[in-house]
Amino acid sequence: MAGRDDNRPSGRVFFEFTQVGQQMRVAAIDEATGTEVVVIAPVSATPFQMQSLALGKLKRKLGAEPPPPAGPKPAKYA
Image (cartoon, rainbow, N blue to C red; front, side):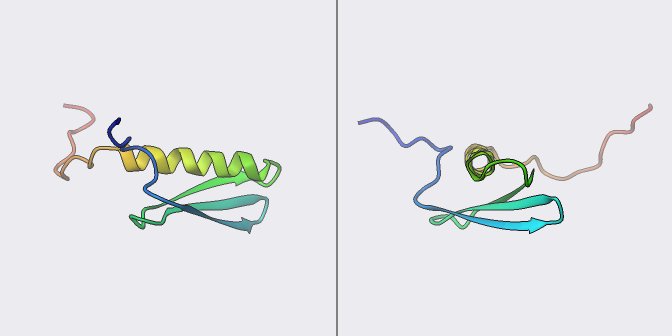
């Protein structure tokens, strides 16, 4: 039996579509972890395209390493 793929949602994924002007705000929420991501897509895109984009972002977030600790940023010019 293969191990669990860490960059896939843990269970069901909920999608929320909200039109904002000529754009669609799509939220994807993983039921098990409560992790949420948001994408903005043109209203001309199909619901499947919007959902696929949001799901891909959610998968990346679930499989991503934690961000590095905050600290002073290096100067642009030394």
